[in-house]
Length: 264
Image 1 (tube, helix red, strand yellow):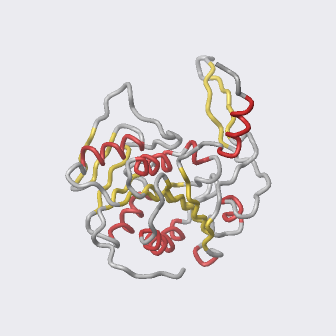
Image 2 (image 1 turned 30 degrees about the horizontal axis):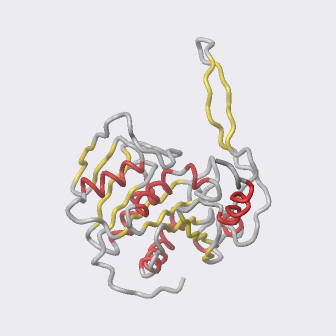
Image 3 (image 1 turned 180 degrees about the horizontal axis):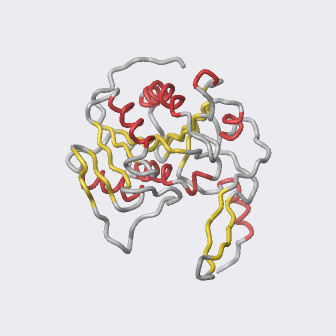
């Protein structure tokens, strides 16, 4: 990967995730961040919060534990972690960049609507802090090839730090599930969409004959259109997707307005 070296030591980096503060991915991301600057802060959930989405703790208090210098565990969601870091822990000087991850698993296509990894980056973006979410794809039941993310993430983050991210835009990075020597390149992609049904309900009966339920994750394999994140990962490339927070369907607004003309 082509790389332009610049002094990035002025950065103050906030590292967070949704896999929890003890997850291997966040330890790897902190290591990478410390290659950029000494001013690195880790604020993450005290246990796994995968699938939390962009949720916040509105009805229960948030508890904070300082584990060591610049390492804090939060009882809330990844969004809570971003809020706590920016408004409380780092209130004297805001972070210049938020790095979320490295997630254990893909954040592709519709995953971004469920992902706590993406949500933390969203919250940083909403607060005017450039944010990058990073995920290592792997097959369920297997082991993530962390060495792939470890090899490619530093130069990719370095290049992205030199870009001026547009307002209300974050960057979603996914590393393919292959050894580092099989990575085919880096692609700037659009968000794909899988066929419906990746999440279903698995009904069970407990030892007292009372029903209970798991949400079952089983990704549907469908058409992977060129230029999407799904297609890039299928072709063993690193996917880099700019995600904007404006969810408006601008193309349909005009037609919708016409259909509603005359309503009070």
